[in-house]
Length: 113
Length: 107
Image (cartoon, rainbow over all chains, first blue to last red; front, side, top):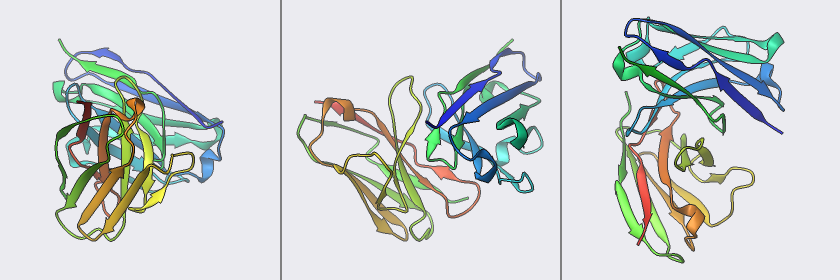
């Protein structure tokens, strides 16, 4: 059974940082593109970033470039999103996804003072 | 960036109805389009990829069509579990972009 379990969210002050994690199981993680997508309160889905199977290619939406970093550890079947210089508008549920065809339940990031 | 425009933004329908949601891309994306369903507090669920191919396990009451810039998602025989928000997504180029969503509500 394919499973994606996100963790690492929480309440953080503006300018702060968090490291989001996604534990994957039930499929060949090392062969899969992986994505992060977020949904802000009352808003729609926004694609954030993705990474290729060996981690050599990474793509980001403009609004997070230079602040967020996607990475992976294939030995641990884990995906990460380092989120720095957080802003109020980054408040959202962050979902990890296998190639946008299977999704985890999400982890909530709240940026507030 | 490619802009994806869905219509309508919301609709009311009855159980058993057939509904159609449209998605228009600001430039041609061939058939690199997916459709997703999201219910409150739940993860999005992939329904359609490649504009018209059904994801594994998705019932055939969901169907997709289109190519280029204009796409549709049709839900036949609406059931209570189908009331949700539906999103299109283009994966022709980066950044990937979603439509703003269509909320399907019970009439």
